[in-house]
Image 1: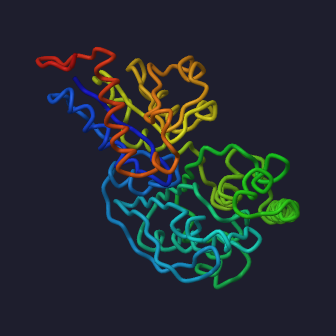
Image 2 (image 1 turned 90 degrees about the vertical axis):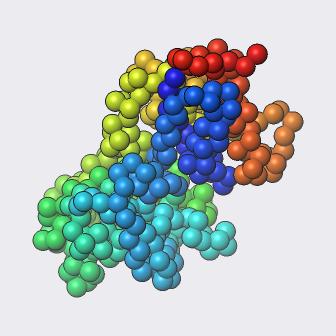
Length: 364
């Protein structure tokens, strides 16, 4: 029997690799002979570098850059055979700031631009950027300023020779436009510390930047899907760098040829911290489900609601790993979460009466 594990991180609790490892232990407890394939996954945010390094190998490059408040820090990106993978949160992420420091009126994506420039100068010709977990709402002006400073000596943006042949792919599940009532400021800035007044100002700034950029370049991509990702950083990549936008999980699974990987699998197990109707809106488990073809896919989560809607979407089973009486604080403890995953996955294997070829996989 072959089981493929592709479980997302449980934010603030477990990484994707840790969740997969716990699930693998749960399988082997009741199916010692099972073939278990662990696939670290990410939709573009936390764990993006780790997932891609597990998929393609490569080396991590450390770079001195500026954080969202223009303080010097060290950030990493992945480099492998002319492909660079950048997790924008490494340089411009919300986790780099404490709650009191969150201020999207001043937070900048400049450091992400520094990572891009370094990758180009080290020979990268395809740059993949994960856009999750941003602290910024600057419409990518910081990114463009950094590239202008590094390649143009601070002059106004123009076509940069070093970037002409570079292919950019941005990984994001966000479909929002840059500005407007469904734009980056209105939908995402409040969680980054913006007040209602700040939101209005940020939205107007984004609109003005898009108008100026359209005059400069002769076209406007501010309303494209993904333009509102990462506080509008998606827009800067689309408008100035001709980036292609793909859902993060789709991009990762295509890179590792996931469809081929699961062809001979008996079961796929995916998961996330909370599973509900939002899961059906293109979140990571849906990407796994869509790429798994006819192979049954079980979904585990720390919290589950809209159970029937998830089953109707095509999941073979939907399991909450936590008992109903557990407190949030207890559920978020790493060792508790891993044990609950082990127990739940063992139960899935046993209760579904899955049997190994050439071995017993059923505990009664």
